Image 1: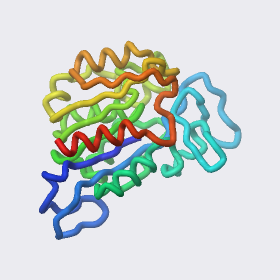
Image 2: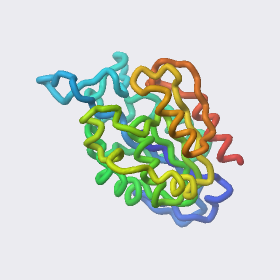
Image 3: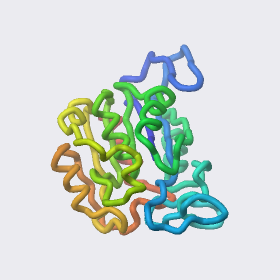
Length: 241
C-alpha cells in the first residue's frame, strides 16, 4: 500500500483526530491507507505511453478489469483491496483516510517514511498495514517509531537481486529486528506460499526474526485482489483485543 493505519477503539477515545482535519470531540479509531501499485522491477520494457509496467508487481483494478502497475499509480481507490478495506473499516466506525503515497514508482524510504510520520500521523495508537513495498516501509518505520501493532502483507527482506527494488533504500543496511519487535505491540504477517514474485523463504526469514503471527495461505496472487476479508477480520480482531 500501501499503509492502512488503525487505532484500537479503547485507546482512541478522547484523542483529537490527527491528519488533515482536527476534531475536538472524542475520536473513533482511525485508519489510513497509502500506496497503490508496487514500482516496476528491472528488465521490464518501458511503455512509450507511460511508466514502466511490471506484471510481477502489484496491479490495480478498474471497472475494466485488472491493470499492471503504472496505469493507476495516482488512483489509489482503483488499486487492489485498498479502497475496499478503507470502506469496510469506515463502516465499522473506524476512521480510515485514503491517501496516495508520494514517489509511487521507486517508493524510496527517504520519501515514504517522513510522509507516513508527518502526514498519516502514525503513533502508539496506530495499527500499520503494509503491502509489498509497504511492508518493508512498515518494518523500517518500526525501527524508530512505536505503534500499537503492525500487519505485514507480502513482506520480503532483500531486494531479490533487482536494482529497481534496491533503489528504494530499504535493503541497504541490516534490519534492526529487535527494535522492530520492541516498537510494536504485535506484528502479524500474511505470506503467500505460492507468491509469484517473492520466494516464501523471504517471508519465513521475516517471521523467524520478528516472531510474527504468520498466516500463510496458498494463493499464488501476491494478495493482488479486489477484496481481502481475512485481513479485515484480522484487523478487527486485533482492535477488539
